[in-house]
Every structure is written in structure tokens, then in C-alpha cells.
Length: 86
Image (cartoon, rainbow, N blue to C red; front, side, top):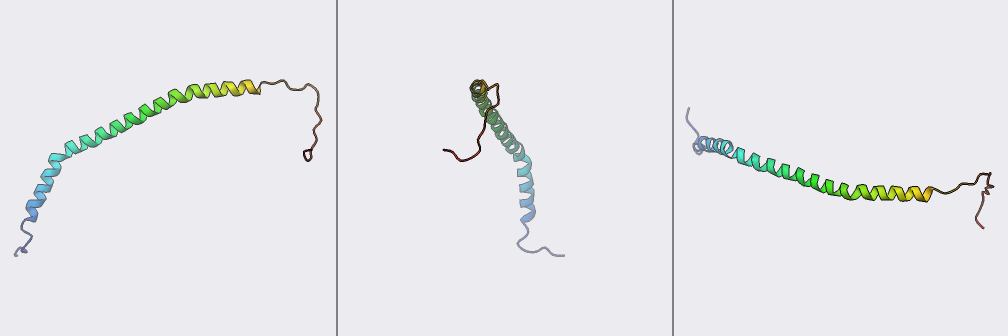
């Protein structure tokens, strides 16, 4: 069997690609992992900052609503009219 002309360098290119993948895979994976870790750390920091603002604001809002709702109700029945406003 004879080889096709023009396909002689394909084996060398394949070996080069495999060597490049073996050599460069570690640093590329390290960069991608570091990027992911920094992303997670950034999201956690922003989330913690949001909680530091949200929790006191939520407590303040809840206390304010509870004070506004604390009103005296009538002890006797109150007549209610259903209809149009005057």
C-alpha cells in the first residue's frame, strides 16, 4: 500500500497536539480553577455585604410595622355599611 501524498505531516502534527495538551493542561486547568475560586469568593463577599445591610434593615422594618399595627380595637360590635362612598 502506498501513502497518499500530502498526508505525511499529519502524524507529526498529531504528536505535537498531544504533547501540547499534556504540557499545557496543568497551567490551563490551574488558571480556570483559580478563576472559579475567585468568582466564588467574590460572590460570597458580595453576599455577605448584602446580608450586613439587609438584616438590620429587615429588623428595623419589622419592628416599625409591629408598632404601627398595635392599635386598640373596639370592644363592642361596630356597624358596617356596604355600598358606595358618600
